[in-house]
Length: 198
Image (cartoon, rainbow, N blue to C red; front, side):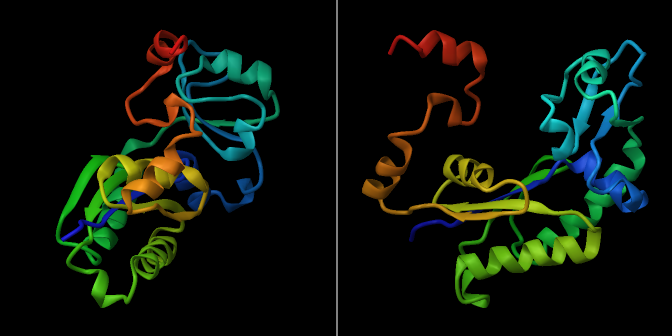
């Protein structure tokens, strides 16, 4: 039997969590991390801030230079973990096999539960809707025959999207062939540079 794996990734989780407490910040660039004039880095940021080139692990002072009108807020890990617990409770409604990657990311083996929803896509959409209702944040989902492809799938339509990846070997190869090597999970900038001549 072909396995069916779902990867769920909470969209800009820390920033999205802050928006549940500060709805007036919606639509504005929000940066979670050190203050704009402090020595420290960005933990995460909203997609509005990313449009200005702000990224996780960037020095906060650099983030301020790129997006001086952003809202900077310090991280509240206790709050984020409480919201994460709610999300993981939702995940458990769709599979007894939930593997946490971090507080905002998980793999679910839905091989034995797909039939309860008719299709894997319907299961994924139900999970996304329940996360939104229970937590007030969005997530992106990838569904595939293995963890690597499911992870790639969840990145295809971020934020707030779902991608059903190909399951047949030929279709998988055709999907991956035009993609850059960096699409593979675990392949970072240095590895991409090392492989570039090939």
